[in-house]
Image (tube, rainbow, N blue to C red; front, side, top):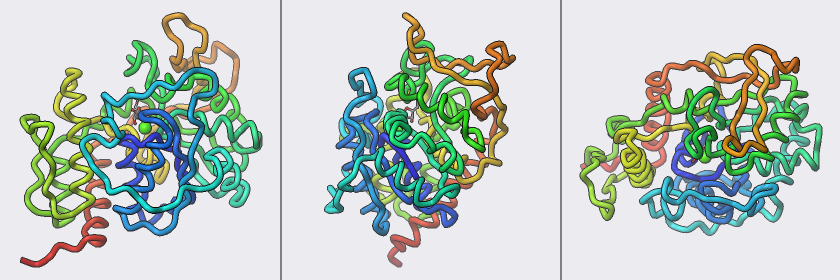
Length: 340
Ligand code: BDR
Ligand code: CA
């Protein structure tokens, strides 16, 4: 079960899961965050079309966080959340039920079987917990991209985006999942900012997909430039990620893009790709400067048992090798290259 605020890196997380033979997406919750929830939902449906996916339920989430107004970030992800990509609008129908109802139903129907992956604000999972407090016991495991532990935030000096958009929801989730059999794995900025996608990764992915011409993403390309890749998955993703690379460059991080969400997706599929550390995690709700900050009690000062495993170490290039091979070969099968 995937909960996303699609989102450029959320898009690649979806592609990675769709390309993974060991993953079955049983539902997609569309959460307000990078862009408004209806735009997120439209993006999710459109990606399913591009990926020629079978029927997967896509549900609309709450239009706002639990208690504060929604803030979106089109400057990071583009006006429609997918950078410069222009996905054909989908005719697929949105689910008639809400994202929180979808969470509850999926967990109840497959007790102990479903891994939950959240790569956006935790609003809809928090709402689902109100309807079904047993969710932590019903899910197999939860993996969350969010937070920053002893590390600068990317939204405020101390807060990471997904938590910052809806801190109350994050607290509800972290508190509730202290009752889970397997503690949630949290992939926070301190690790996900080491997952740097560079133009060469996109070129390799395109080559693996058999897409032509050689996929070149350059900081010199104008805003109007669009990929001419023959493979639609490569073409749309390349247009999306170039926007994200421009954003990172404009913020002094280099011409690259942090792949927070696909990394969390890979952890959800195979937790052995990260080293983790058990800690007690909580969220600052009232600080005048630090609202939305995730706080980890590393030495047990609160006297509360650990409620999460924080991902602390990984091999970023091994992750990219896996991602490129998996998405590239799947994209090639979906859209076989035409012999010239
Ligand atoms: C997170 O914020 C969003 O903008 C990204 O999609 C990612 O989930 C990183 O802080
Ligand atoms: Ca996201």
